[in-house]
Image 1 (cartoon, rainbow, N blue to C red):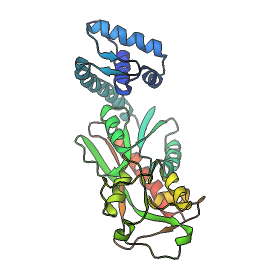
Image 2: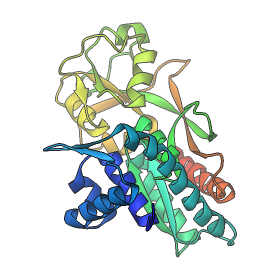
Image 3: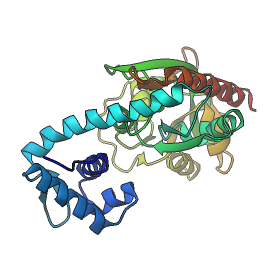
Image 4: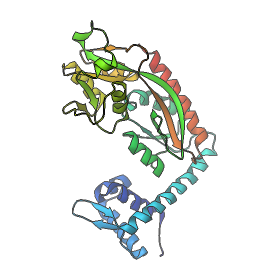
Length: 301
């Protein structure tokens, strides 16, 4: 085996992750033919096939799956070498890749990015918004540096830093504003609009209402909190949203917001990163900024 390059390893990792030449090429910012050539050269250098080519997607061979595990370890180690260099500086130099779940991103990120830009003028912030399981996968694989999620995640090899706790609020049609806020048992019998499968906020809402995830809920799932609130405004049902989302999501919908009686449902928001990340000290500075931004949101009317 000779002429093996780090660039080829990154191309291999992207193709193994996306399972599609076009999407992998876009992720690597190269053309699809160029990616195909690099993968072919890599296979020739190894003397074995890494991918099974299908008409619409590609999949790893048995050898490719084993090789992918080692390649990800290598790329993660290479990235951490760069992190060590950045950590040696007085502040962030270059890129910071932050993952955020969708029920936090629209409300927290504007203030956080502003704070980061003010504190570190040369920082290049990359944002990845997706659900928690995907963020955990990408954090473990080195595609992102840290993630802002609902805790706990209880993943080995990750450091968890709780940042703040917020209440879950009930959103109902405006016509129900004079009615008492229902108890969890009563709420569970109502037409409760939920985020689709994969969102941790869905699981938190189901747990509060003592509902099982297997319960049929056809037509009651949405892809975003904004969609859910607009559906409530149209009189389709009721929903739960985190308190930080209330000012943004309810300003253009005919809805009312209610607070549950104690003990109120809450979620804990925190940051996670790989325990081996040399930038842990800088990431704790980011965690402090997240707390500051969250306090500002909690004080907002």
